[in-house]
Image (tube, rainbow, N blue to C red; front, top):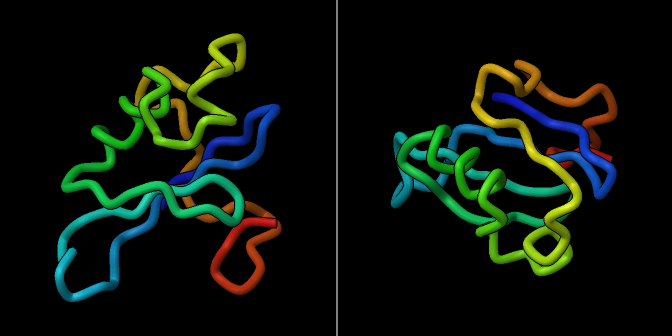
Length: 86
């Protein structure tokens, strides 16, 4: 599990628990789930390249994401409420 705080909100990556996505990772921003990836680094790449499918992020290239997973914080955000960061 990892998270990244940005001016737009907090991105998070958690292991997928859906049977069809076993071994995958879910990425989201605050209360929005953005996708399921086979590798967390692929999710980070889409955040960095503004290819998340969330227009509020993808159309704001002035807001920077972390270049790789090592720059994301390990674990859950401090204010994780009901499975989604607040």
